[in-house]
Image (spheres, rainbow, N blue to C red):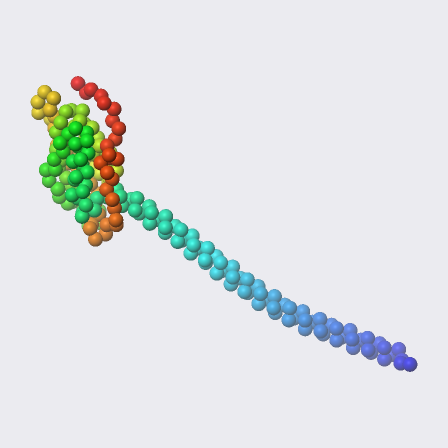
Length: 193
């Protein structure tokens, strides 16, 4: 039979072995946990970067569509003739004859504009409707001067100078001009005199 002392030594050796094994196992697990935490931080960082990139792309897509909307308010230099045709067609629709007296450029290279001198002839009501449709057209447009004169009993004409925001031909995006029916505001038929 073995002595109780040998049982104690065996028990102590087994306890020490268990404690050393547990310590080594704990150290290995701690090292792996630290590596996993580092990897999780990298994953979180990359996920956040991907989310920011996706948000930026969505914002850029919105900006591009907003830019197209804003660009539609400017007349590209290459589309001046189409714009004039829209004004003349709109005048005919409202019962006036719109004539373009001159076209020029003004403004700065950063903010170019077109300067048009127009004349509208017809009845007072038709001339005023035409002036209103030009003034409220969906463009970056302002009327810099307006003169309304009576030519005869029921014949009037308006001379106006119009400044229209423009885009140089090289920088213009594909912009379609609004058809003349969309420019004419619905102005009630009032008798002015």
